[in-house]
Image (cartoon, rainbow, N blue to C red; front, side, top):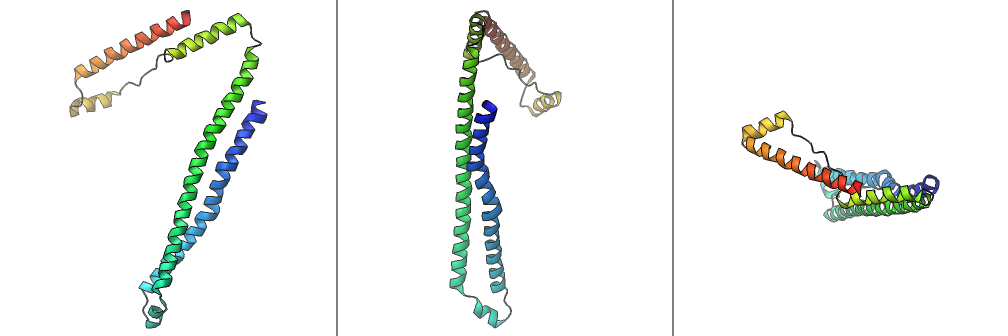
Length: 186
């Protein structure tokens, strides 16, 4: 059910409201606007670089303004379409993810009811307790020797700073371990 129905439904929504509009924008709108821009640029070069009096007379400032305004309008429309696609994509992803999670939770709740009640309840309670304390301890990235050397040489850090950071990190990890173990024991 989750793969054949829920996941495929989410994929269909994302294709319809995100991928298809993006394809249309990149394959149709952008090339059309690009051609319009190139045409406008070519008109400007012809008029500005005209060597003969005849070409200069053919250049019409009003036509140029109309072409420029149409090109600007096409660009603005292209940007608006892109903004709409980005907004719709963000909304579609969030909505689809929420529905997938809801469908998964519903499906898992049905499976959970089939498990031995004592064991299932014990593990679920422990999971909730660990979540309440902020999860298990995070392993923090240690600075490399080169990074430490740079910070020391540049004066950004002192040896005492590193010693204090290490002590603080060790205390934090110990507290997290104690909270985690307390949550598991309950």
